Structure formats: structure tokens, C-alpha cells
Image (tube, rainbow, N blue to C red):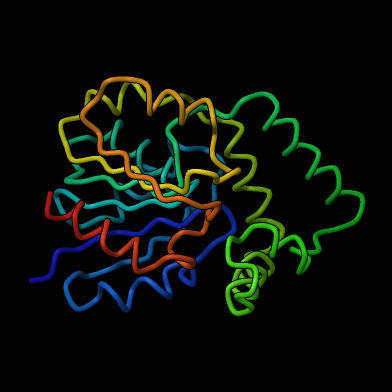
Length: 230
């Protein structure tokens, strides 16, 4: 029987987020995409996931916001988690500046409506600027998930609390994998992660990519194998 890994996406991403990494792993692992439940309350989100997983213990791989959700699940229900993988994600709380920026986005939507991502904005979010298919995937996911999902998911980020201390005390394999110059990562949380003594495995790659699973799927697949074999 193949080892099962539950994949939780991030803000305004869906199963297409995994489209380039799944072919590299599916021969050896059962990969199950789990959409972020449609609520702004993290306690509700993880309770929905708790009832969704049939196994006694699960392997969770979460990307960005999904990484925070996976870590929130792990610290709340540690007896239900076998291994945890945080992809382009930190366990930190949102800071005031981030919250203010996000509130400004709501004001723009109220004024101009929800128009998705422009080509230039989507291009600015990727490392590989010449990958037209990648840029289109990022745009399509955003517009297909729509305004209600955007507002729900972005609002949930206002409620983030710092999970670092709780994660440190968990007795299970925890991996962090991220790009060194990913501007979407919480820098304060990253400094804490790198400067504090703990048993969690932190692995970085040179670059700016946030959408790691779409931009460097080969590198990610190798890290996933190391995590599962740990």
C-alpha cells in the first residue's frame, strides 16, 4: 500500500498547484488534494479536516496558507499527525503592516470589483518569467476560485496566531522548505525559525519562487521523499 500524503493548497490556489509535482511522486505515494474549507475561522477549518481524514494519523503537506493550516492542525491534534511538511510557509502571526495591506485590497475590490490578477501581476509573483503556462495557471486559479473565496481566505489570515513554540514541542518529523528570497514569507517568523534551536528540519533553495510546486517540482519531489523517509 502506498503512503498517503494530504496536500493543502494556499491562498487562491487549487489542485492545479500540484499538477507538476504529482507526476513525479504518484508512482510511490498516494497524493490527495484537500481544498481549504470555506470559513474564516481556523478552529472550524481544522475541525472540518479532522472529520475528513479517515486515517488515525495523517501526513500533511501544506503550501503557504495551507502550511499554516496544516501546522495549526498539528498543534491542535498532534495525535492525528504522522509527519508535517510546510512548503513556502511559516507558523508566525500576521503583522499589522500585512493586515493593513490586505484591508486595502478589500477596499479596492469594493471600489473596482473583483477582477482577478492581471498578466503583469501574475508574472511578478513567479520566478520563471518566461513560463507562460505557469503564469496562466496562477491567473486561472485566482479567477476561478473567485471573489467569495478570496475574501474568506484573506480574512482568515487576520486571525493567525504564532504557532512556533507549540510546533517546537511536537514529537514528529517537521520539514520547512522555502525559497530564500520569497517576498511573500513572513520575515520575522523566518528569522525566528532560523535563529532558534529546535529539531525541525529547515531546507532552503536559492531564488524568489513562492509557487515552489509549480516552478521547481523536481527539487520539491526530492525533499518530499526525504521527509517521508525521515
